[in-house]
Length: 278
Image (cartoon, rainbow, N blue to C red):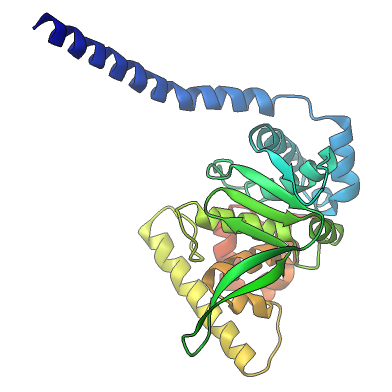
């Protein structure tokens, strides 16, 4: 009887300790991030932003500050691994982090909590993909990719494509923005082109606008017409969201003019308005 009581109390004590530990983790994380955000942003990193990330110069001063703070947190939490012989430098890390954190500038979201690591390749990397043809035939195809986002907590990027996307801030093509938009979409465990939203009404509005625009894109492509939104966006709703996110951050004026409802949905989701940038 005494042994059973001791075992019971031991179990209760361990359970309470575990609960206490779990309750302190968010507080500890907030404290750590607060310290990181208040840290010194290295002069060499500022130089990278000024010279290698032209989109940074378009941000208002307050958003430049917030971006630097977010970069400090992101780089403190997310490890980078070089693949295929690539040596990862601070310049590479800062450039990737800058674009990844731009998606967080408006809304107070977590720092990609499911993301465990970023893998950098020198150039396009081979990846096997499962495809289903229009007549239902399944096949495995090896493709060269510039980027890939995994639900299992990894983002894979071609460094050559990261540099190319960063160099022109108005071409509407940025592999880091694209893949981290996928991360936002995948944060619920799968990708369907609808990232987590605040309410059922928000989902209804999102679904209506996105489906209408997605269907219109496919119809334009079937009719042989070209437009601002490229053909890759017609692959599926997840790719549509990622491609449109690239356009939202880099070609906002055109997107707002040609697809105003789509632009407004993205502006509401990201809680930022690139039309106000210089």
